[in-house]
Length: 243
Image (cartoon, rainbow, N blue to C red):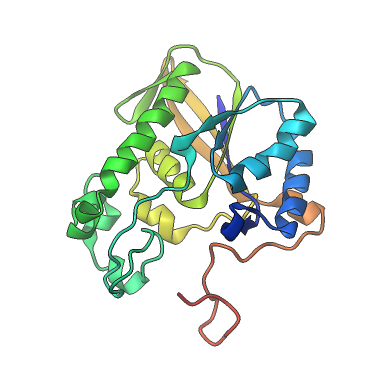
């Protein structure tokens, strides 16, 4: 089985939609995805994800299941360097989280006081319970770090969601701390991440990524990448986001 995890196009956060650029991205994305044989679509209930998916669904004459659990990962934490404002878990300063060993460990990242106070693990588990329920309905049942292939298949499932949520799903499939993915990867708007199952012993499968955050459809359409989700490449650029 193959999974396509797709980030929404360039966002208009104020109106929970996508920008004019985002609609161009979504159009190019739809032309790309229409060449795929996709068995089922799952879409976040947030407007920017639904709008991104809409052009693909229209082009493919398909319907999608709208899922609350695919909404952007909602929990906020008290960032150590900020007072009076709660932040998303992937906007910490590197010097504050990289010095904490637990954040690099898949079974301990949620044990720190910051994560416990924010009840981040509880929401994390809720999302993954629903994700595994979907995978089980398509024939792959989670058992420890593997998936039992009850009905092995070559279906393709598409998930339209958000960067923070995508990292949660990938951390589960790859058995790593989400902090590593939240802080060391950047999936550009409208990007596509692909994973396949590998069943090297009968009935025992893992998901293996063969590309992350691919935006070849934007290059093909000569559409420049959005800067969304990134921070300044060098400190001396006043036009790029610093914090």
